[in-house]
Image (cartoon, rainbow over all chains, first blue to last red; front, side, top):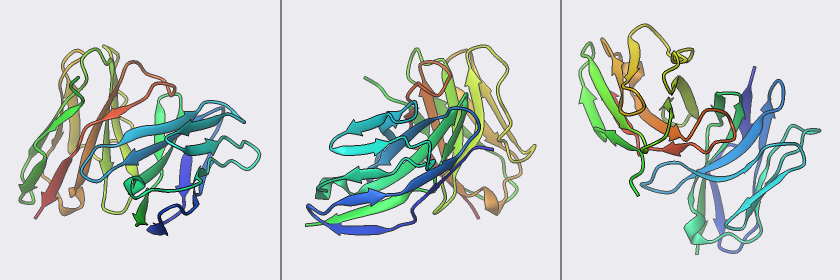
Length: 110
Length: 115
């Protein structure tokens, strides 16, 4: 079946530090991969996506590359800001079946 | 423009009571999803509506859970004879069409607490 496993949190970083949040998946066929973000007090919103192998999704300085060989879609940002503090969810979409990871809470301190 | 709205934002109920949760999707969005998020866990798919097609109910955890959607507008999720393990945040999302390439827009959720 389809499933997503992402790095457990919480993660606490200082401003301008490098961020990696790991995400691996199990799927049949050719899924699309997503990162969603939930800022404090707000609903989930799409951060970035990749629809096929080797695609790189990017937005707001965040990047993730769809790696079929390692079944991974790790989220990275070179220099985090306090405003990036949020919960990040890795997700997999296969036809109409969407699967989400448990979420990773990121706190960035000034 | 208006996003996905959900009501109530919080609901506290006693074990055994029925509850009804409402979702107003973005106008024109044909696909609507319900998810459950227990504390510290990921989103658990419950049910999916696409246009006038029969809904995908494969994620509903028991027959106490049901959902309806009127055309391509409002949806209600009903939980009968609530149990303490039903306590969670219930999220609704809508998208322009079905399929995994279409971004889902989420509502703020309804936090349900069953005492």
